[in-house]
Length: 520
Image 1: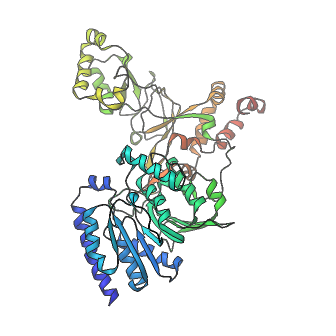
Image 2 (image 1 turned 180 degrees about the vertical axis):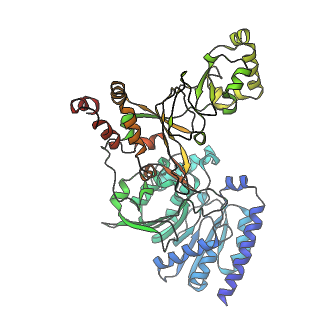
Image 3 (image 1 turned 120 degrees about the vertical axis):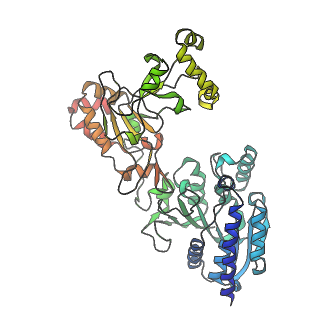
């Protein structure tokens, strides 16, 4: 009968979830970080937690309880007779009221409050099961960030980046709410595993607690239909890691039957800056190894601040009487580049269509008005559209000039999806005089490589071939991935890719005596 009652209440809960979700727009829910845990996933994680916990009486905490999906699963998996205590904390008063109405008589104590402002109880909890709010840092006020940072410095003596999302603070704040040896199961975005602002969380998990397992869902298997985010389940015990401890990393499929898994020694985990390489890789890359950053200066393509105004077609340049000296060729987006090698026309423009030009002028407006009145009308049109007042343009002088991004011989696409065998990243050989905007990463050979290519121009093709030989796995190991299989690689991440193959391509075609001064 107890199971029937739980299932009946669960049906009501799912209805309440839909009703409450409809009361906010998608933008409002994003600001609150409200993305409900699917009932099937809550049940799967709760069953898995029981295999780790055993049948000991449960003291349960959910610091972001919502409508109570985890408590519902807990009641079904454990039975209410095995739940010694249960507390749910919820900031949103509507959700708190709904959870209290649904589960109050079943033993769940609801506290309507901000979890990060609450003091831990005298007696801690031995099971934390939760999906904390995914509130990005730009939705947190400066006052909130200062408070949370100070709080963390006092409780765990850990610094944290201002770019960290609210879920990081939730997980760290919950430390003092757990009893020694207690188990925690957190469903959080997997981004913390790679990004710089996740370093505090990685340090906490590898030093302060015993990290049991991290299960990362396949990026194309988005757990939340209303949030494009790749998710991970982080499981740990509140206890110091034992000597020789190894962490179970698993990937894809359900947590109890993953498609791949491996035990990774904790010392390797602690020394790694990219945790998404596990379970595929069980080694730490040699930091002394040559990488792309040793051979190339890598920069993001330029950001105009208003592409629709500053990037023009040939027809627009002619229509507005803009002198050729004030425009420069710029590549179209990657979807228009069908070949991996961009050839140049006799005037240096790229031999691709559509052909675009970047407005870049340092002449004062008074002179433009006097000498090129039609061009001045175009600038006035931009001013009427407040292009000049936008953040990027307003920080340039004059506002219709551009940052300097000379043409780069090699480009890498900045992001892409891995679907139907398609590789998300492409290297492109740019033989034209076109610059590129910020959908590309631009690779400029550093002095030694630059000098080698200048002395031996035929090497450029071999270097490009070596760049194309960089495997997707190498790029994935340093880049990051978002829900739906969207991969992205930043300049610093691309710079960390091993470059031995590029050097090998040169060594095969240059006499040995020339190699030493170039790359020693």
